[in-house]
Amino acid sequence: MNKTDLTNKIAEAAGLSKVDAKKALEATLEAISDALKAGDKVALVGFGTFSTSVRPARQGKNPQTGEVINIAEKTVAKFKAGADLI
Image (tube, rainbow, N blue to C red; front, side):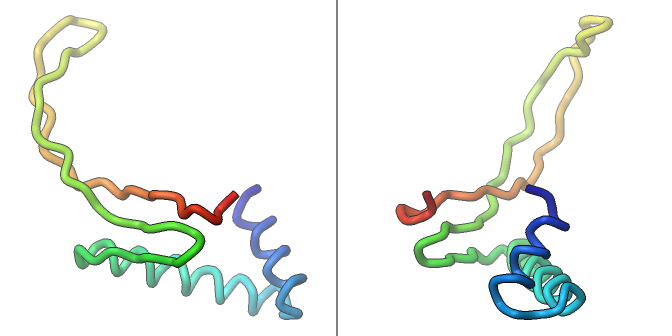
């Protein structure tokens, strides 16, 4: 399922126009993204929890040359599914 399919399902289930459903979906995704950027968790009971984690700096290898490279620390998004999701 892609974003368009999800928008269509939301519109159908909520009795909204596709334009309104798309606005609602985009607002929801933006709110989740903003919360994660601020370092907050987003917990949707029964669905799951979005959070961030710091992946520490490490060394890797360039697969073409075998040269050792330094990979910088990075903040990544995580999702833990809730018990009622499936």
